[in-house]
Structures are given as C-alpha cells and as structure tokens.
Length: 214
Image (tube, rainbow, N blue to C red; front, side):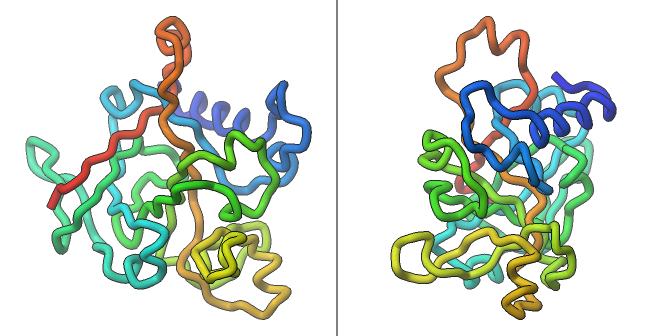
C-alpha cells in the first residue's frame, strides 16, 4: 500500500509511464496526462483521507451531470457524508493527489465499457471493462492542450451522441472552448479474481460503491 506521498507519486509514475509486459500498443505509456488506476481491496479502510463523490450514469449524459450535487463532504465525529441534496449513488475513493480536496463540482461518471470512451489505444480486455471517470465540473473551459475533458461526442461507435473523454489539443483544433468538465482520474473496475497472496503484497487501491445513499 502507498503509505506516503512519495510512495503515491511513485505509484502514479509507474501507472503513467511503464508498459505492461503483455501490452503491445499501449498509448498510456507514451503520452498520458491523467492517472489511470486499477483498484483492489484495502485502501479505503486504511486511508487517512477519502473523497466522496456522486455517481452519474453515462447514459444520463449532461442532464444527469448538471443535476448531481455540487457540494458534499464528510463532517462530525463519525465522518457523516453531507450533501446539498439527496442523490441515489455515491462512491468513496482514497484521497489520492489528483482528487484530494475535490469537494465542490466533483462527480464520477460510470461507463459500462471503456470502448470508444477513452481517446487512446488500450488492451482489448481493458476496453470491455466498466470504468469510472472522475470529473471536475468547475473546470469546463478547455485550456490545457495536454489535458483531458468530458464532452458529448459521436456516440462511442454506436452512431448516436454520448459522453466521451477527449484530448484538449483536439478540442482546441476543432474550436471547442467549453466541456462538461476536466477529467482528473480514470478508475478501472475492482479486480475480483486476484489471489489472496497477491492482495496481501500489493494492496494499493480500493473502490467502494454505496447505492441508495441520500
């Protein structure tokens, strides 16, 4: 588990800059400017800080993003989650550097598959997985060419418009000045087939879903 800030930075560097041995054409190792993490059990329970975010379904598009609570946090002796209004789905993530302090405007968008959503090549097994895209709705202006933004695009291959992640440089080239928010983190689904021994030695990340919390 990454217990110090230096260790966390090293983990993120490894995730952003090193190729998998099985990967042949993985652009994540070449030009990624947003961390992509694979979650396993252990981190949330042992984290000294966490981030609580409302979850939106990708098929809800910009309407659901606008309706999701803008402010939420944990307070009191019991760390009770408090939000400006009720919401059906929440996620608790460790307070990683990219999302630490994201109390206003943060949202996690849930995609059933990564295919057609992310603007880089990846392994086929990863494209078939469910992902969460953490977005800061307070940063809608497309300013950073090397940044990533959530937009409504050409349908993720389905022929209809849908939410997707796009590079800032491409949006600027096409004259797009505003997005639905800047992408801070991409979270891959919880690995359910890991062996116990592996978990005990590599417990870096965990994700916990809370459905029906108001």
